[in-house]
Image (cartoon, rainbow, N blue to C red):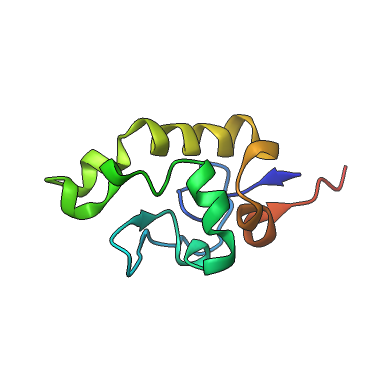
Amino acid sequence: MKIKPRCKKQNDGYDKEIRGIAYASNGYLLPCCWLDVVHIKPELEAHGFYDEGLKLENNDTVEEILTSDVWVEYFRKLDEEPDKCLSRCHLYCGVRDES
């Protein structure tokens, strides 16, 4: 299933509302608020989002987190390997190919 991520601007006229980055109560940034749920914590951990080095208090700027290998790889997968993305990305931003 393709993903039209609402956590980043699309260049194809897809006009769904852009979702902002979420700041979770545990001190981490997440691509959107839909990922801030307890039952997918293991999946987020497996993707590296809860690495201690990505905690906001352990960085000088938000940009350091957003340009980390974990975040760069996340956005790459959204474009190139959507089948390897988080399950909630498919739930909220997945698009069925109708061709």
